[in-house]
Length: 286
Image 1: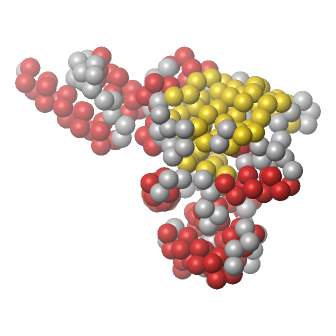
Image 2 (image 1 turned 30 degrees about the horizontal axis):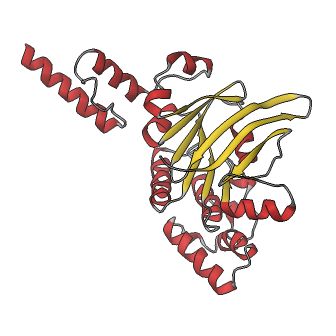
Image 3 (image 1 turned 90 degrees about the horizontal axis):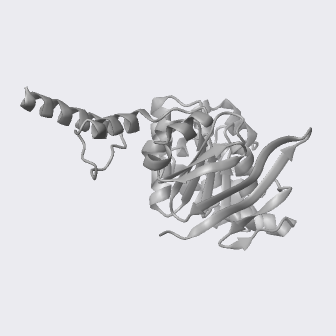
């Protein structure tokens, strides 16, 4: 079992006016895994991410990094954010420099890296994210998808152990979303732990190693996608539906097309293969 790298214990937080966002929330993030945090708009998902990198301080509870409780002094938070990066849903909230290169350079330079080392890291990050051609462009002249990648580059250039992403595919077309997920796949393969919020159950089911389902400011359930997202009652409380591919897999299992010990489909290709298998079985019966 993978070790827990980042953990929330009993987090509570309310915005001015007494609006509760987190109510005794517990969450465990395993090293090297992709964790999807699911819930409807306004459920507190973004608030949780802002706690996990030290931007917000809870009124109760604690955040632990490698088993040690995180402190909130300026130096402690700076060290925390070196290890736990955050990419916000709206890239304009993170982009501020005159050029893309300057924007992505900000983090590495603030780590105290020598200019030559910082430049090499930024150039490598821009190349990895296929945005090297944008290096001298002003961020405000970029498309939304390009801004998303630049904001991601700024976090990746810090080389964090954990990368938090708020609705990473929101506002992107199908091509843009696939490209971004391919970049994140490469980061995961290199050992980066990924935590992302979403209300897209199909994305969470097909891409995450684990999912955590929000319920009333807490994590109602956390575990494997095929287990958590098959619980219709929990999904209804969170105003979510079962992923289509999972629903097809469960229906195939109930119909005997898929054996009780067979793996459930996780992608559209898996579902198509299952459909073809069902058609073949039906033809043999007929």
